[in-house]
Image (cartoon, rainbow, N blue to C red; front, side, top):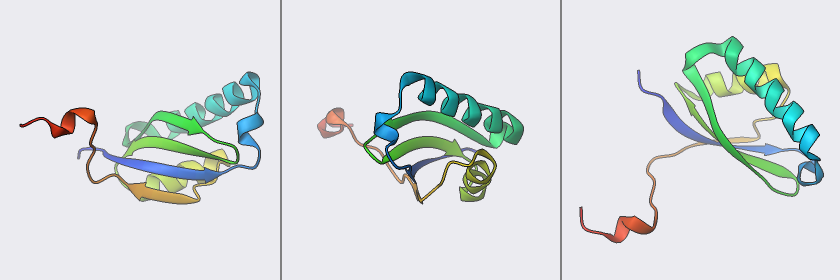
Length: 94
């Protein structure tokens, strides 16, 4: 089964003020849980804003993302599956 892409919005107060070491610890915790959950979920990247993060994950389904949130302690406030992607090159003919 192919993994699907999801955007996870996480409400984390003041996350934008976290120091590098705090972000490193958060990444280590997330990676630890990802190893426990196995190949059905992968973290691609996250964008940190003032009071939330927007994380890009590949996963078999939403339930494994919720399991990661439960075990890691990082909230999955909103999970949205990505239907398609576009970028500046999309205007070019196929």
